[in-house]
Image (cartoon, rainbow, N blue to C red; front, side, top):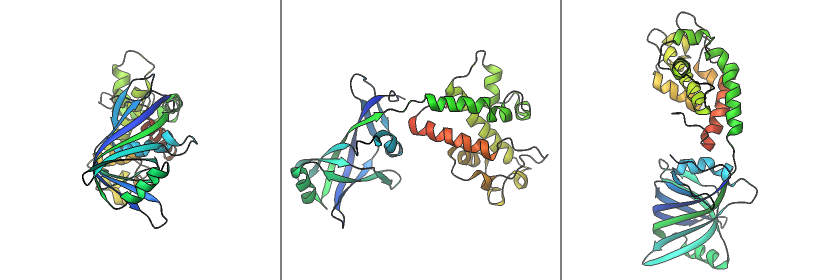
Length: 286
């Protein structure tokens, strides 16, 4: 999947099933678009790269893309109202998602007198065949800082718990977990950031598997999690949905093995994972 080059200027477009402009009590306007399947992005010159994001990705990255002090981006929407094709130009503020991420809504402020008048005249009317264009964002974030943080994490706290000299590594030898298999199968090092990230993610899967083993439900997990399965627990850990201390006791196995994943190391992982997700820094498959 294509990724925007660091430092590039991005423009966005989307085709939408329907929409409506709502006037709020304070006089401001909000555009609500329904049936947003994807957001197409492409780079400004001299780069010539294009790709697609989900609406959720655009919302998640919004502050990083448009939080440069220049204010909200300019945007245009064209659409059908009745039998007429209309175009309106406006400032577009940070969007919100609803209805399983298929509805996107955002405050708009018309640019120029005619567009402000158009917003007033369009309030409450059903729009169809909507085309949205957003200009332009700067993908200024360099992933090198996140890659450096990941490398320090892997060679430091995480490496002590899951690296080749650890008891966890010894217990998992010969397995398909990447934190073991990459060391056993890779002939060249150092590992790439994507490989390191894959190793860290696999270690969370290992902890989830150990904590949910058949004879271990009442040992490794707090009471409210004792019936969770490994995949569910892994998803919670990878996403940081629940607080670490709410999930685990201090023990990982029924034989009394200590949990190699500590409160501090998990917090460090989440910091790296949040940055990696926000800016598409690593390919966890690579």
